[in-house]
Image (cartoon, rainbow, N blue to C red; front, side):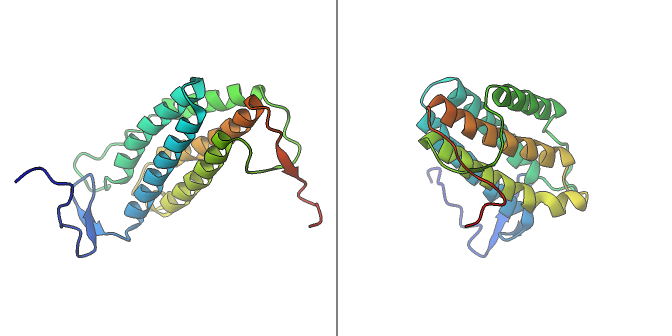
Length: 185
């Protein structure tokens, strides 16, 4: 039989983790992996909207890292091969990218309404999905089932995506729409 994309092994509502265990498809790990996969796909849209510039190269590097993040999430604490593969250097690198992007932007004085250039729009969507993935992992981290390094990475990544969205609008000369937190509707 030829190689096939379908296995039928999940037809009864379970799925296999990277570490080999089978769990229900509504397991928190599976939900978080879905969020990370969705984030990666949206980043692909942001990268395509951006074209071939430096930001597109940086987005692709993040997309590749997200596969490692996903494999960490899909590996249980009980697995023999359990070791966090998200190094502290990735968090430090994200912080450096945030600082670099942020320093080239006008000061933030109000809330930014998501929108603007196509790249910025996709980066804002990616940021919100990144935050959802971070929330999905909170319980696993509290229970000691997952390294806090994964949450730190996603936390910094969502900040970087916000900075990149602002940077994309700035580069495209698209003014940011702002709103004061005390503004009357």
